[in-house]
Image 1 (cartoon, chains in turn red, cyan):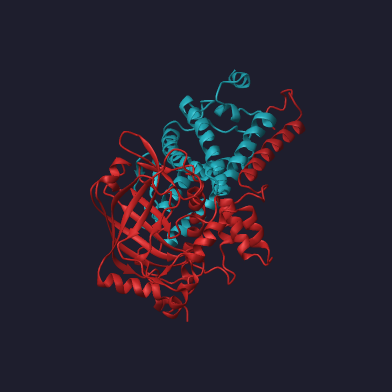
Image 2: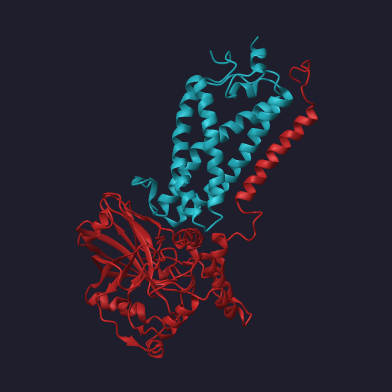
Length: 352
Length: 187
């Protein structure tokens, strides 16, 4: 051994114990950080697993909003948004768009008339190479106030306990407004007739650095034509995709993007609370959908419409949902891209 | 010169300890961020990316410095298996210091995520969008993180063993400040 003659300041055994303690403490701290000692921690895995439909996960598909169809088009900014955000996307001009119409279901084969919530994923690219991604839905407010409550809602809806939903509603009374909307809001027979809302709030910063908390919506140019749920069901399980394909083939479809600015004191952290109607709104531009492409082969397939992908001039607010969505969407993306063979790119590649 | 010097050069020691802090922080941030859906997820991700690139840059500088200045020789009486373990683990650490940031960068590129450093500063994609590449790189990034942490623990254990049990001057060669023991050895 080296320098055996040196008088040991501490025994070899003591040193080895010390080394074991240091390494053990390091490993334990790592495991704690990873959540291995915290089974109650709400992880992206748990959130994504809770989305699984009773029929089982649809491999290769998004874990939620699994049924959808891609589109491409342009966003034409009118310049008015520059008063709110310095993002290039609000400078007057046309910017290419990639998006996806979708249904709020984990089942890619769900019949259209069985899904109450419709959504739009959107990506606008600007010449400064920044991207703005957003994933919006058609209800005017979200079902619950927090990601934890959303997770509990998923557990309650999947629960075999007949009182699970009642118990959940008792603890999360905000669900009642969403339930009323789901029951009373008219259905339409087209994605083109839907208004899509960010629901989450974000913070815009103008060129002077002044910040405003905002939400945004896409208002359809097409007049909504109400249809009963039964009549929609009669049109077929995939009517919405056929309809939007035909409709866009006949002519581009448009939405006006409107940004709503919060007043001080508005509930910016709670997407289940709509802001009062009289809030300042700014029309910032027009989305034009020019072409529809299938989800399976389309350009939206491998895009994660993570709502925290924002250009400079926009950032997340005190709303806790975008972070939770970003974490869960990433998990969903990691899972489904690893399962690509279960969702072959062309129908002809499909397993018999 | 090489082999005569008892200690790494001051620049090498500075890079070592600076990177030690960065890499430990990076591993904890990485394993922590993927375990939560809370708002800190975004904060951690926003540190993880620029810190990873910082580690890549530092590691490349460090590699250059190492090639230029070399390293003090290991003690002649160090048993051969330990010498081999020391050499292999250091190669592995260099591979991971340079490889992990590249895997992360490539993984984000293959998923068509913008690679944000800070503010409006973006890195270009280094790979085309591809689900299979993304899966391969994601798995590599994930599993090598645990390998990396295990190697760091092994490295710490070996350093402490050399400092406390063998007292052979290997720890002192990289110690941030000169120690009494090293002075004694140099005599």
